[in-house]
Image (cartoon, rainbow, N blue to C red; front, side):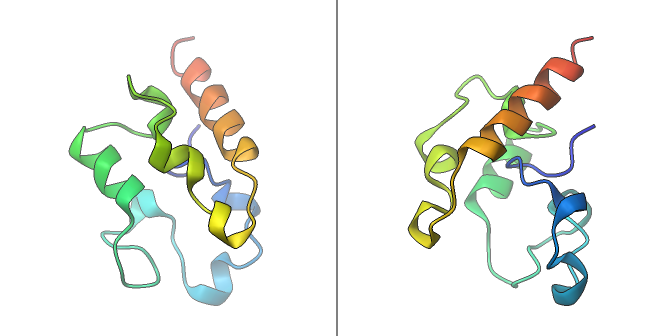
Length: 88
């Protein structure tokens, strides 16, 4: 079962409650009030998550969070897993 559009494991996030995040699949806008390009792109294509996209992994997704020191591989692995689960 997917938890986010970009592969973030929301149910394991320690900051979720502190920032009032309900997860991007349950919120119109991100908790920070701005726009998430990945969320916008995914939803405009009517996809549950980026793992179902024909362009997976695109540059935007593959580089998401790198500027803040986050490793994208756990998110990409989660998306691959969610995508495989949806075809079973």
